[in-house]
Image (cartoon, rainbow, N blue to C red; front, side, top):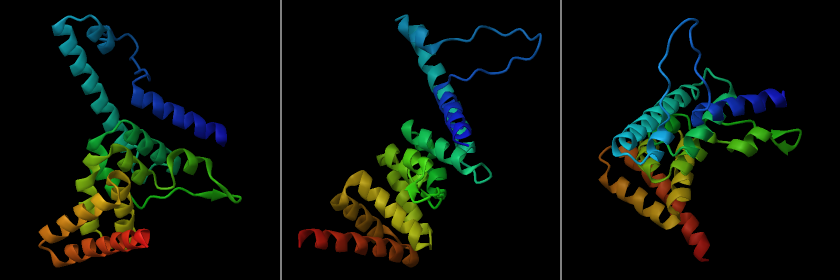
Length: 206
């Protein structure tokens, strides 16, 4: 079981880093693949431009593939590994999907010990990925607080914002969003999260 899990993680890492080869149909002639690193290394501007374009195109394909592996139909470890890699790749394109899956939780304890998957990817992999992505995650986290009637989701979002920005700045961001919000229910949800932060700040000052 453990070996299958490690193999899955390695395969996902290969996917994200562009090391996995693509299958070539029998008898089909293909042009040699361009190596973006060699093009950039050449120092010739046209090749450098081509290398940058190729690298970014490949990165976009890997991100799209990883986003698809985060869907609920996939196995839990597959989803967690894909989310982890999206965070490590600092992929802001993945933020909408990650905020939708914030409640996804890995089994934390097995026979009284923290599970290997939870140690590797965190018990809430989508949250950890959004924290890794950093500031580009903030608008999506604020929107999720406003849109979700589930308090637990709001709490997860608040915790991620605090991790990214620090408690004081997180309070300012949520307060600003609350005052700008026209929907009373959304403003109420933001206000609840603001109250939690203010309580924590008061407790810290005592």
